[in-house]
Length: 302
Ligand code: GLU
Image (cartoon, rainbow, N blue to C red; front, side):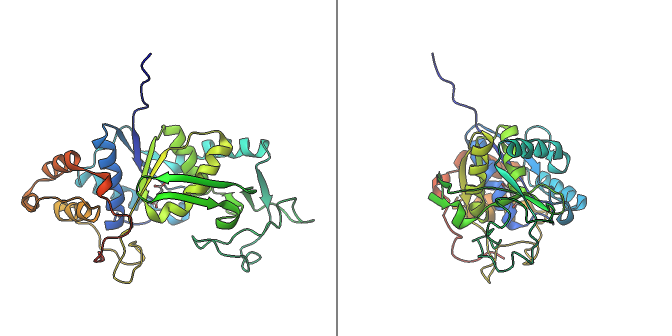
């Protein structure tokens, strides 16, 4: 019997905290081209689970910008803000399996904790074996125990993480009642049947946690490729806080060409005069993941 490989399914998952900027264009371009050049599907998910930081206007703006830049996604857009029941069900399974525990600690009580590479406090374990008398649950955390996670990233190479050291017991249900990004992304990727995650290397510190969570929930682990992150002249990741320039929807070709060049692809100079579909035709046919640099290319992009 001939085994049929699982068809490639990738995705782009922007958080609508502001307009799409060059950094997110790079992530969209890399994930789109890897999916299309492998004959795969490319899905779009709006990650608005962190409601206080997101806005419907920013989500609209992102959809319009992606459309103007010629990104064609497959199927319906998935909105995390409408998927609370799926996250609650996953958390419930973890509760029944004894994998999570309620935590009463306030941010102030955790202020002296060691800091993880992503800037969050490493949980000192205060409530791991039960809430202190008289205290109520604020958040729910996943026990990481002595879990060690290793994976081979298609761009960044072998990544190893000792979760107790690198993250600690991390939050799945926040004190404000919202499900955490780590839980939402794992549940959504599995439900959508994502086989390959191509995204910015700023998320590399989250990946081990997500793989561990997949294991706890009995979900498959996709393949990962983390793209270099665009930084400004001060070496900061481009974001709305670092005043990344907004993309020009009236003129996508220069920004798209810059994103391709940033990803190590080599659009021929005559494509500067190309239309958006012409540029995409060239890019899908010529895309090579092995040309993508591991870190930001020399010469910062602002
Ligand atoms: N929503 C995340 C972001 O915009 C991306 C999550 C992911 O690709 O897994 O940074």
